Every structure is written in structure tokens, then in C-alpha cells.
Length: 101
Image (cartoon, rainbow, N blue to C red):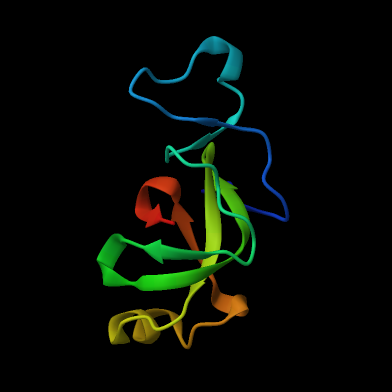
């Protein structure tokens, strides 16, 4: 059972580094990129599975990790078969390590 939660704004978070997380930040959500989470409306690239460019529609957390909700502009056919036509109603969760700006 997951603890997925949609978020309207970026909550307090800590960037994960090679050193890990110290005790003072252990309770914060973890963000897996060196850059800050992009703002809603920003364009990003979903680097995984050749999904391509997407628009950030919000934020979400699951199992202690922070991600961005996004809608691909022109996803591959397999993505559409799996998820349906891209829209805000079926946006996808992507983590910092899976995206670029």
C-alpha cells in the first residue's frame, strides 16, 4: 500500500546527495536531483523511456520522495496505450533523477 499524496505547492524538501540524509533533515521529503523542483507550468524533459518533453502540472509525494506531476506533449505510442491520451486528468509522477530542465 502506497502513501501517494498530490500537492499544490513544493513542500519543504532535502536534496539527496552522495552523503545521504542527516538526522536534522530525515523527516523532510527527499528530492533526487541537484536542481530544485521546477515550477508548475514549466517545461521539462522526461528522460526515462524516451517519453520526451512535458509540462509540470503539480507535485506529489510517495514513500518519502517528492516528485513532479507532468503531462507529456507527444508521448510514445506505448505510453498512450498504457495511459490514454495525455491530459491533466492522467498526468504522471516523475522524480528528480528522471527529468531534466
